[in-house]
Structures are given as structure tokens and as C-alpha cells.
Image (cartoon, rainbow, N blue to C red; front, side, top):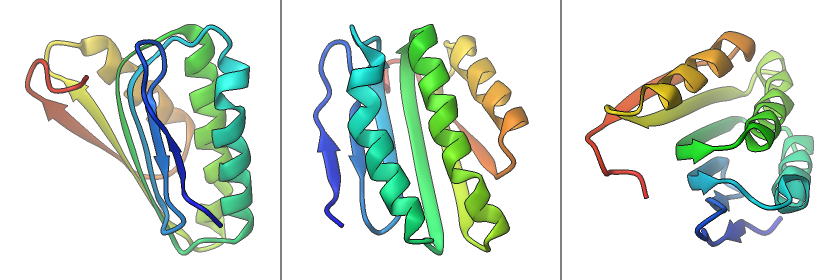
Length: 129
């Protein structure tokens, strides 16, 4: 399975998913058509999950996302959840700038919904691009 790399733009985040189980979403997510933008990452993720990986490390480092992106991100995080019951180790690192409480709140909301470890990482201002 090939790695997935989607370069970030002004409206879409960097997405890097490796076949070694490291998933990274970073930047801003306000695409014109979120369903179309996230179609490739979701397909890649479903194929990756089908291989029953032993470990997944997820890095979410967003400084802003719209409601549609928020829903899709939650759907992606839920796709991963069943792997925990199959014995996979899952760790999610949720990065947020110290002056952006909305992103911390969003991460806490997701952590209360999906049942695998969230690690909150506070960054100084202007660290997320």
C-alpha cells in the first residue's frame, strides 16, 4: 500500500498517511467541497484499516476547520476506533495553540466520543501554519 501525501493549500490541510501507521493532518480545513477533498484520505484509511495494523499514531494539528470538516474528521476518527478492540495500539496527539481554546475544546469533544487515548499538546502561539 502506497503512502498518501496531499500538500496543504490556503483552504486545505496537509495530509500524510504512511503505511507504517502514522497519520498526520495539519493546517487549515475549509475546503470548498469537503466530501470531495476527504474522499482520498478516507478511502486510504479504510484500506489501511482492513490490513489490521498493530499500531496507529495520529497527529492532528489544525488551527481552524469548518463544520463540514469537523464532521468528516470525526467520521475518520470513528473509523479507527474498532481497531482497539482487535488489539491495535492507537494514540492520537491533538495539537493546539495556547491562545486557541476552540481547538482544545474540539479535541476534548472528540476525545469524549471516540474511545482511544488522546494526548493534548499545547503549542506556543503561531506554531501551527
